[in-house]
Amino acid sequence: MQVYYKVDESMEEEANNVLIEECKRLLQNTRHEMRVQAIRDYYAQRGKKLSKKDCRKKFLKREQYMMVINPFLSLLVFLI
Image (cartoon, rainbow, N blue to C red; front, top):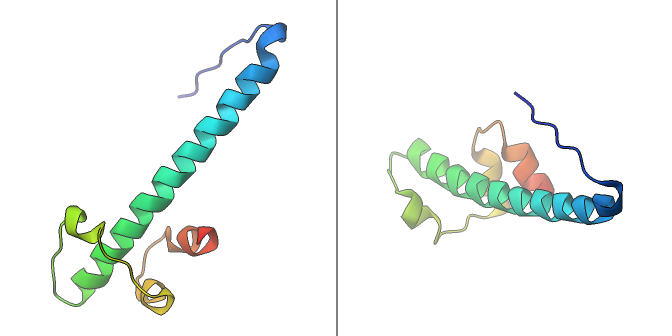
């Protein structure tokens, strides 16, 4: 479902700025969550179950991220 909003012509520039900032915020959140999920998947493949809280503190090497099979991983590597 899509929602459409109509913006007054005098507010178009401000509305565009708000949209750009919101998109940046969403992309940052998405990238962060993909990194955490990739770390969880990496350790799960090795038989170790970690919580998201623990994974937020860890970082993998680029090669380790590449070993994780994840549909969003290509986007994560692109954004790194």
